[in-house]
Length: 230
Length: 196
Image (tube, rainbow over all chains, first blue to last red; front, side, top):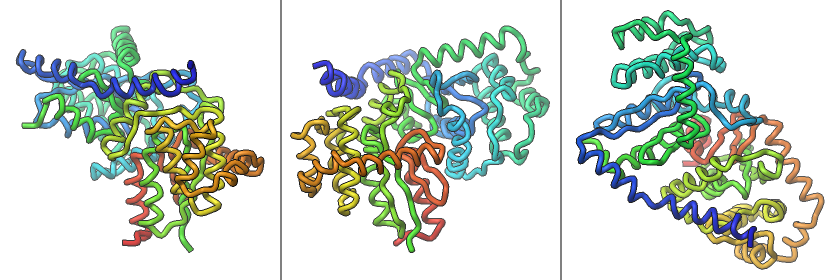
């Protein structure tokens, strides 16, 4: 009986429950009735080309919809003790190259980026004011990091600080402050509580998807929730 | 001579199931030598899969199956003996030119019909509707040489540095995931291998 429960009944129940979308649709309708916009959260990492693709693709998906992207950058993520973690990082470059092709872009890097070398970007974004200016910064930063012509050189802080000033009209926050580190940890905790165990992932209406793998489905889910493009 | 595409597949992976028909179609649409390589499930290779990943996978696969028009949801997880027996018969089916029939029959049985390949009753249904003789299948399930071939497939997946399934390899390049079949097709098109 226990085997039947584990191998048939529980998986079948999980699948059945996943098709029940009425609560999410009602919640989205209530949000609209209150005159508010929808919010899709993107859990992502700057050291990952698949996250770069996901952010740019998601920005296209929400265009014309009354939906804002909530940027949730993280540094620490992944399955604890994952023996394939390093291989996944290397493979993300191969996959990122293919995903870039879908956007008509070319990958500018052939080597992974050390997560610590772009921690400052994650910290800035975690502390920055959510909105179109921050999103524009994040998109441009991702393009420069992964689809620019800088090759595999080190990531210098100053060009990104200049971009921050240009887009947000202020000096970037102090990435070494305790507030910055706490903001990143808060994002990582939020991601763990929200369900995704790896990045990039997009969540709205209580459901999350790997954002590099399911861009069309995310659009279809937004349609189903009533967040259609005008 | 056709160029070779290897396809690493696990009967315990619902994503492999989603890749099934489209994977075999590659051999119809392109001038390639498609090699089906059944591998032992991750959890039987000492890898752990967190519960959050298992739950997400079921939900995600249901959405993808709906999109692809495939049945999904009446499952029977083949972890253990079911996976071992299915892998053995897939080798036997391959030898008889019936890999497509058997792989699709077994995967549909496992992920959409709650058939348990660890039992003779359900395994026989899976085998016979794939056009395989039951006596031959029973012999294959007990054949150490066939088990060794499955071990070799699994070791090769490890040797190429990959961890999950389904994976297609072409000219040393890996395509991981049923959602990367279209990207593989682009590369096969670029290589001038389309039959169209």
